[in-house]
Image 1 (cartoon, one colour):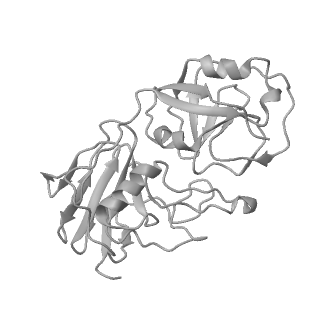
Image 2 (cartoon, helix red, strand yellow):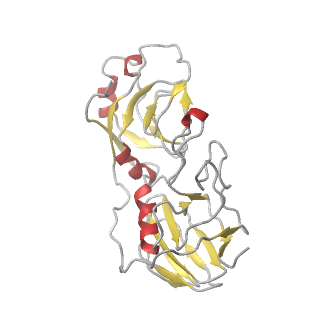
Length: 291
């Protein structure tokens, strides 16, 4: 392998390779996948001079530690966290030069859930269906990082951005999700969408890249049967038998048999990636679904 590589010293709770995902394959049963916090992933790529489609690392809660085999430029954004090089504190949200053999440590999230690590040249693992993303549901793409793994890097194509620290939104104190009525609103009791909007929901600790699960009042069904499996989209608010809404995220299944009461606007899903367990969730109806 080329000297342009990263050695994984500490993989952390869950660190995966992510890019823009693999859209267009739902008819084959393949989710889109890709970075959950798209704006944060795009930011670290801009900071290190990589194109938007370059692959980055997505960490979960407690970060990771990496050792480059040659000098690299990196940037960390997303969930605020301490960043050090050989024990020396360096900037978060800005380009940082890491010498060959130095230890880059991305610490535990101080707020939020997921930090993103961009490296000049991008993470150059093999593409699967046009993407380097790890898909936890289907198993496509590279496996989650493990201690001792070696990640190849691409060649830098532009100089790093000239910034001190890039401004970015903090993790949400309240997760506000704008929704339109879903295709199976009629499977619920009258007023269920109003109940969704007024319910005191919170993010469940069972949430993951597949879906953001909620705790709160159960939504009442008007029909007790089950649907044949039908197509599911990013942001679908599916209601399983316990009545607690689940918001489908990047690794969601492409079909499902539980009714969808609403669909979250895509622009709000990046905030869902950073909502910690216990964060209040407010569903805000913003219009009717187009037919």
